[in-house]
Structures are given as C-alpha cells and as structure tokens.
Image: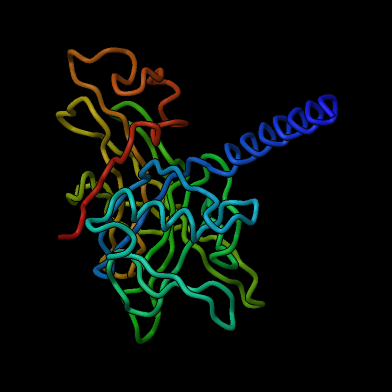
Length: 262
C-alpha cells in the first residue's frame, strides 16, 4: 500500500511540475500600440505580459489587447475594452474606450485574420479605431524599423495596399510629415517613403517617431528612437541593454507612451 501511495504521490508531483511548466509557458511579453478614435497614439509599443486566459494553450491577440488595457487604461479592461463572439469569430466591441464599431489590428505589420490569432514572444501588435467611418480611408502604414538609436537615422514608411487582383502589397508613403513625441517636424518622406531624421537638442530617453499626412488618413506608425544627451551613458539606464541593441529591445523599457484616458 505504501508503495502504491508513493507511486501516486510521485506521479502527482511530476504531473504538477508539468502543469506548472505549461502554465509558465502560456504567457508572452508583447509590444502593443493602440490608436484611439481620434487617430492619436494612446500607447506606443508598451511592453505587456499577456496570458492564456481561456486555457486553449495559446495567447491570442484578444488576450494581448485585454492585458494592455488592464495595465494601461484607467479602469482597466472592464472600462476600456470589449470583445465578443460573433458569426465571424471573436470581434472587437470597444478599443481604448471607443465603441465606433470598426477596428483594425496587425501583428508584426501583417494583417491578422482574427482576434483569435496566436501571438508569440516579443511580437508587435498594432490595433486602431477607424476614424473615417464613411469611406474607410484609414491607411495602415509602418516604418522599416521598430526602433533605432542615436540622434540621426533614416526611416522608410510603407503602407498596406492591394493590387488589381486584390493581392496584398506594400507601397511607399510619400509626403508624410514625421512627428517626434507628437510634434510635427520639417522632415518629410520622399517618393520612396524615406526620410532622414535628426533629433535636435536630444534628451536622454526614448523618443516616439510617428508620421501624419495632409493628403491621407494614416494609422500612426511607430518607431522608438533612443536619444542620449552629452552626459549619457553608453547603455540604456532603464534596462542595461547596450544602445547598439536598443533598436531590437526598446520595448523592454516598460510603457513608452501611456496616455490613459480619464
């Protein structure tokens, strides 16, 4: 009897260990950007720990956006986020407190099929409310880098589009005005979507690079630039990551922009 009891306890301990290991694996750190119903950045590449809430063995876009609202929105997900099951799968009902009824979401700058799509460690999620609810002209666009370091750099801005056969393609965004920390600059993208950018009088810290257009309705793109002043160290003081690697791991420095709605 003792032998059987020992075997049962041993099996239970092993099973428990596997359960704990599996549970630990069912969470990922992702980088979430959300644009509100006014077309403004609410959070930019906020580092969020998303968990497998429904227990299906994966972390979904839905669960990542839920986690982002729990961490960054005043009142949490209960106040600012809603998703529901529909005939077309999991659907958004509210994003950042806006229930406009029309939303978009991309993972690593690729259009997602469903809120149920799986996200992986260090994925980049960009969700937004449509601001043009009549002609749906909101254009998803993105830079060729998620992050960079230094005070001078070149970015290329591209937009999602479709060819004559409705196949997805990308096209350069010309004439977009670069913004730094929400302020328009003199830097404008050329015919290839490129812009040479200089952060003047930089302070040590992370600068949010985005873009606006006077001729297109752009979903705000995001690139994080680690700037450093005269007395700065050669590494990111928040994370200890080498500046040369900051472009690959800037999101590890916690929420970059967090404009919590009151």
